[in-house]
Amino acid sequence: MKHSLWIALFLCGVLLAACTKQNSPLLADAPASSAPGASAAPAASDAELTVLTQWDAETGYYYLARENGGDFVLHFVDFTTLQDAPVCSAGCAHTDEGCTARIAWEGCDVTVYTAREQLFVVWQGAPWENDGGQARILCCERDGSDRKELARFDASVSVAGPPAWDGRRLYCILADYTDGKAEKRLLILDPATGEQQEQTGLPLLDTAIVGACGRELVLRFGEGTQAGWGLWNVDDGSWKELVRSERPVSAACDGEALYLLENRTGSICRLPLAGGGETTLATDLNQGLQLAQAQLQAAAAEGFLVRGEEDGVFDNYLIDPQGHTVKQTLATAGELGDFPLEVFAETQDAYLVATGYSVGQVELPEDGGVVDETRYTFAMLPKEDFWADRPNYNQ
Image (cartoon, rainbow, N blue to C red):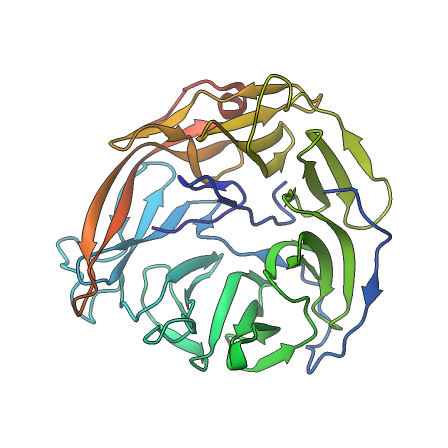
């Protein structure tokens, strides 16, 4: 299954952080700005942008579980009851077109994203494979019904990373691999009318949406040995680079500021997205630790979450606002061993976490072999207990 949200942790040690205005890096060169011409831009809007995830902060969490044959089944986990069930009728076999939870396998990864009133399903495409699936986007109701295809792209195109949403339009980064070059452009899609517009001139290499601030997208990019972040205005197509630094480097944002973990010193720099007031927090992350790598996963009022690797083992490290670090002992337990606690979604006061997992194998179609499928045991954990490293689970 796939999962992404403000604080989603993957068993492999990688977190995808999608930061929004509602949720909560940076030794920068002098900011460089340019305003590449936009091929088309929508009329200005007052609505703020939000990076979409797979969760609904009010009621529950959506995810896709792969079944034998390669098809996916849309599941919903209710925050109140913790019931985890497909969004279709009881007893459904999920094998025919009538199943509202079934998402057909089409040769590439599929992700579901949640807007308040609807779901967006994105086939990411696989232009680097000879028989890879074609990228496309559809929308549907929360129960998987009333599906409408919004866009289908050429075989050379993939959808890079999560989209953003302003309540009316969807914003996605497309990567076009024509002639072997991953040209990036921003797709602006109106689901109500089907109107599509595009903006070009985005930074190259590893470009992805990692946050939003007002009418600007926070983009991550890579260039040679450096990684950087900047702001892209979706109304006029202008670009402002905020910071770039030598790899390895990691960042998180909260919709108001960008935070950068400086691996060598363990310090965390805060760069306000509106400009001015840069500050640096000294931490004791590196004291007594020999971390081969450290990634800043999330920034919150309670502190910072870092995923670190020491002697081949990954752990979560919690840094409080004063810079004091503790290793989190809470874990997601399973047959392949214990992993740092996996977090999938948040409400105002708690996180949806996995206390356990199991791994099975599912068969892909047309002699495609088998792939591992991970399933989780869910629980709610109050935020104060997460940051205090207390196993006060509500299961």
